[in-house]
Amino acid sequence: MPELIRIELFKIFRKPRTFIAFLAITAIVGLIQMGFYVDGESYINFGMQTLADTFDVNGKVLNGYLLAYIILQTLLVHVPLLIALVSGDMISGEANMGTLRLLITKPVSRAKLISAKFLASSIYTLLLLIWMAVWALFISMLVFGTDDMIIMKSEVVTQIIEKDVMWRYVAAFGFAALAMVTVSSLAFFLSIFAENSIGPIIACMSIVIVFTILNTLNLPIFNTVKPYLFTSHMLGWKGFFDVKVNADNEQIVGSVENLPAVLKSAAILFIHIIGFWAASVIVFRRKDILS
Amino acid sequence: MTPIIEVEHLGKRFSDFTAVDDLSFTVNQGDVYGFLGQNGAGKSTTIRMLLTLIAPTAGRIKIFGKDIMAARNEILNQTGAVIERPDLYKYLTAKENLAVFARLSGIRPTETMLMKKLDQVGLADRALSKVKTFSQGMKQRLGIAVALVHDPSLIILDEPTNGLDPQGIADMRNLIISLSRDQGKTVLVSSHLLSEMEQMATRMIIIDKGRKIVEGDMKELLDPSHVLLEIKTVDQETSLNWIRNSSWGQQPVKVHNGAIQIRMERKDISSFSRELMNAGADIIAINPRNSLEEYFLTITGRDQYAGADQDRAF
Image (cartoon, rainbow over all chains, first blue to last red; front, side, top):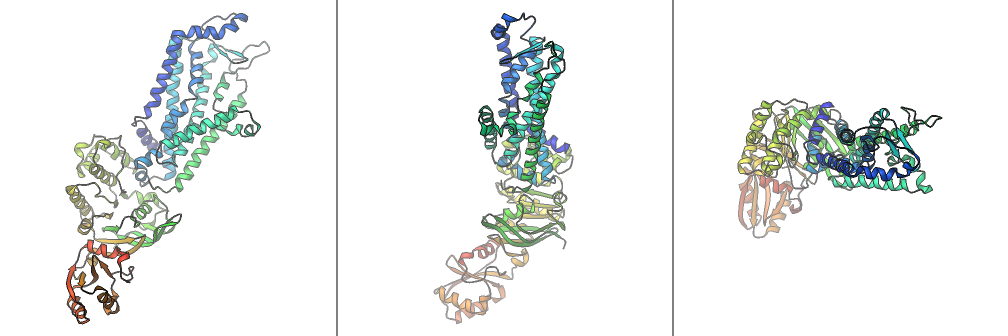
């Protein structure tokens, strides 16, 4: 199995399209960082003006931690497309090239072959997230420095002390990886049914978009299915930045306000991943290779 | 003779279409086994079933004495194949492609081994070129190298001469003959180049509409003592009726290109001609022919048979 995964990763990273996602993330993150570097203070001041009337805010509000949060919030909605570019091509691309039939004639079981491809596309997704973490978090920390992190939401302002931030990012990126692997798994599953990669990529994005729209519609008929849609749980990473406070309204270091909800979301995403993998194996084992 | 491939009552249906129907044949060790049939006859479907690309809906396949479904990996470990087009990873070099498929076959390729295999198919000087720069013929040769990279004892080739120039076709023929004769490998090869097949196959099968028409040794089927006799007469219908109603009518008879065709032993030509003339036929020409092409055209021209049972072997 490790040899099969190595072969699949070798093939993934020899394809030019693989690097589109890395370049896109580098470019988008770089643009956001440049924008904040040039004009970030006025943006922050605008956002802080209501707070400034009530609180005395000292220190570096625009720091690497806050910028990483902004970048994550902006980018994670669009990353699924970049992931689907590769995962949606894993089987359909081979069928399109005609190499799938040659692969099947090799002495490797279909279940092993599909699992190796599945794991390779998941590893690609994880590497993309690590790349994003390096650029969004570490480069931002390097350029903008670090301090306590202030997050403004519609009704709540959360201040997380500096020493309590890094582990939250590690957890948030871990959760985001789970969410993105779910999308990757869906694109991979869809790629089994197609003989060119456009179909699975568009189908995957359509599903993500439709499910996201369903999440925003507050209608009883949709409310019953929302808890089971993976898109309802993809932004669960934000939960790691909701902190508990004590009686004096001070932050409890290392706390997460609603950890069970975050873990439940993670579990639902994980079940989706296992479900897509199992379905992929079952369908592929029975599939006639006619390409 | 050790049977390498044993196919018993094989069938494959795609919803309402039967691609392969009750097909049985045996390929023995060391055979260069020709797999012949018109387009859509079911050759590729059968080959795909032999390689587990598609599942049969009926029948059984045994390779190396083992059921293909039960011992799939063990069988495929000793099998190399090129199926229709030799599609490879275009973004990888020839050597990288070969290395990938060698690893998938469970061997760790060395530089020497890869270069030797590429040299065997005349691609050593293009080892580092990406496959997207290759001509169809070069891809075909690389496909053969991929099929041979793990030194299989059974080689299945579906139209291996596609895209090759005359020299390439001759090289491929020599390679196939050498694999069988010098290395003792068993080769199942489908091709539409009947003259090539005639030169390299030791046994063959002809299928049509998914069913076997004939199977046997090439020497027996193309026995020089047997010929395909082409007869032109003034009154073709009368001659045809006489042949059908005589003892000669035991053989399949058809009308092709304005001539009656019937297969018989060479020694019987004179007595047949005499009897036909005595029956009142006004003979214009009698032409004995004997080639795989003639044989193939005769046996697969189902719609032109004049009442003969096509499934009966010559």
